Amino acid sequence: MVALILIVEDETKLAQVVRDYLHRDGYDTHLCHRGDEVLPWLNEHQPDLILLDLMLPGTDGLTLCREIRKTQTTPIIMTTARVEEIDRLLGLELGADDYVCKPYSPREVVARVKAVLRRSQLNQGINSDDGRTLVLPENANEVRYGDRKVELTALEARLLAELMKHPGRIHSRDQLMDAIYPDRRLVSDRTIDSHIKNLRRKLHLLAPEEEFVRSVYGAGYKYE
Image (cartoon, rainbow, N blue to C red; front, side, top):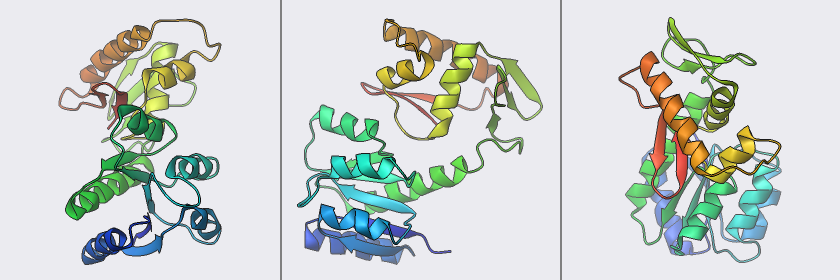
């Protein structure tokens, strides 16, 4: 089945170039040049991925990302010419799966699309016990990989479950603290680093050749 990519970009020529490159790799596409065209279109269609510009007429990309995430888990790649770190992180914290900074190569965009779609497909089977993925049983403080398993603390299990919900998505320390401390107690953000260190050590016992939890410098952590 051909994947459908929604391209939301107000620069018409750039949108057409990206569309052409995606078509060459076998993807179907739909173009929206205004932000206020997106939600009505999504009410009638279900794309496999959304390529979403930050600065748009009508409705901006961050607002759209926030609204889309209220009802959909469709992968979103943000594109932006605003390179300030806060804009990058804000896009990810609102639920974007990746971002690309302008000016960019259309080939890079196609590569990012392929990577995010691949992660999304893997996520569909993340809790299936096929011997090649981590399995985190619900309400059990243990994680399995093939015929091996290791015990986790309640906090470690909660932390891993949060990361596994969205493979490839960057989670900030604040997001992870909110997830594992629902009472919002005051703890240092370095507490997350300590939990991650212990979790990685245990996962290494299960699969020494794999690195399931990765650090993203200056941003947080993600599950691969």
